[in-house]
Length: 463
Image (cartoon, rainbow, N blue to C red; front, side):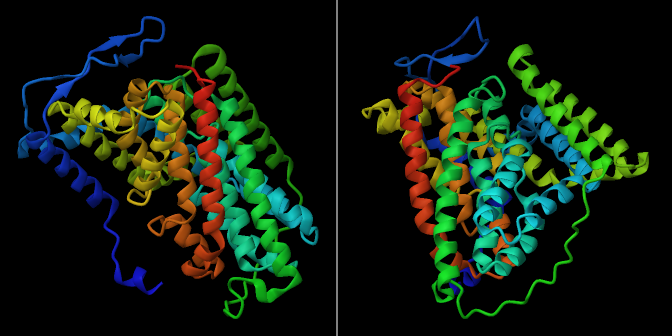
């Protein structure tokens, strides 16, 4: 852990600014070029035509235009930015009613003493929240409870942290209906929102089984022999948790009903009516206001929680806009297609399925640089989507490669603030967490690569 104290990880905005500057320099040294593109009349998507790359005149981006790329990027990504802000606002209103906390608390508390159900049930509840709401940081509040229960049934703090944190990322990585990683990535790739969710639900199930098996394998060893714990001998403060074992109220059940009905209508609208960002935002807004009213929040409280939720999403929202500025510079310098052509030349000789795995490797490496999944989507999807067109990989597979590369290593990357907060709450040193988690990271990545190969072979659609 000592090296982490010495090394200072640059701020995400600093990293993005460095990439913007690097892109601007690239417009002076990388030969400019373009692919021919065509608009698909049926879908309205803009497609790259393979084999049409040609050089064009050099158009380097000067310092003033580099700075101007920032407001241009924010403007270009405005629809997605407001989508993120409003989703965060609505979630905070619903969270302020306390219903979500009570539901998860009771799900965990009811399983106390039933060790064989504790891990899978907790993981299932948390992963579903992450797969739909995109919950990640929001799950941190349950780690102290999960750790206390895990220790109470003979496991250790690592099991408590893992069943919440890894549970969240089984849902987040597959992201069947995650508005943040899946929604943004598919929007940039010009795919119907949440399309291909059947394959992502299958991926989520396989991730869930793999991670569940690994945690339970470790938990059983610790229960049989506490010296097998990776944190054996490390003293941590005992968590004094006052469990709320009260039953759900009729108000809680009504709020759950509204949430379930809202998501059901959202799925129907997306599949049957082609609903997109504006319609989905509208559904969430209605759902949030109704839940707030049922939860006895007055107009002032709804407004305040709306503002707090938006404020908490500002970092992510601005990341998206700043990351789009990179694309603005690459486009204005006419080197975006040059980058795509170079990447295609590197992996183009491989079968399409292996090329998809190459995308996964690239995205995994990027995840050790970018802490924001939404920021990564805005940065890399404009490159991955057309690169997939060139390599014969469907855009749905390109999005999967992004999701898998973004999500899996969030459980080991030291620049992820959510991870460091989670293991901090559990009292688990980072190096001990790495000792526990690195083997499952390898297996999880191999499983993701296999799923990408299958998705490529079946030409997972649409597009």
